[in-house]
Image (cartoon, rainbow, N blue to C red):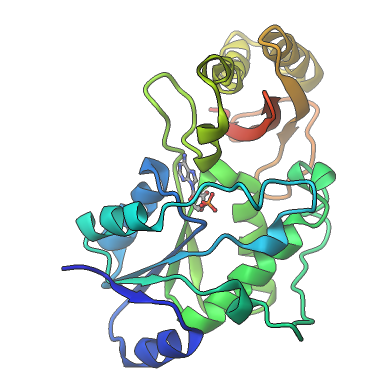
Length: 278
Ligand code: AMP
């Protein structure tokens, strides 16, 4: 059956009140790929009713970013979600989510200022604000999100705990192309040579794991070898960081369970990826 399409907050709230069972929610910005769909499949397994939101959230983009060109294809998204038998697709308008008199922001301290927060200082404030609003509208039991955006996952878990929301987040593994590139709506921006260069993100993360397996633990030394690999592919590093997955604090020596995340500019596109060191 086709999912029910809902584009008003009021209608979503009315329908939500009538729903029974465990509600699973997958927030997205659309232009769906297998990464998004893996979250939906997980939600289908773990909950009774699955709601997917599609909303390109303007407040998480800064003025020099790609809000106006962000890829969109709502018809295709609906088709993909129909195939997975999603129950509801919520796609509100900007005007509804951010009316002219909008004044309230949700901000998580400290952990939003490291990693991606350094070069995108207002990004997470936009993410936490929109997800808080969506939680209030949809009141899900479980929210499904990808480890691809690892910092986002940690920030939102913190917000849910601090603000006593009753929902929980389920983190889902990163889905990759066969050659290792993490799926992202932004991969669409890459030329065919950029697409090849973009493999350096995953390759450098695998190099880090290999070096760790061989006994190297110095974060500086590992980051330096990752840097060489990426720069040899004509890509520009925004950051590479080795950190504790709970606190997001830098750690000087790799240990099992730590994460390495990076943001790299390939052609004009900023891509992110990360790995759990085991
Ligand atoms: P976005 O549409 O980029 O805001 O992403 C919506 C959700 O899909 C977020 O929870 C992302 O972490 C998740 N996601 C995006 N790409 C992937 C991927 N390659 N694998 C797993 N989850 C992903």
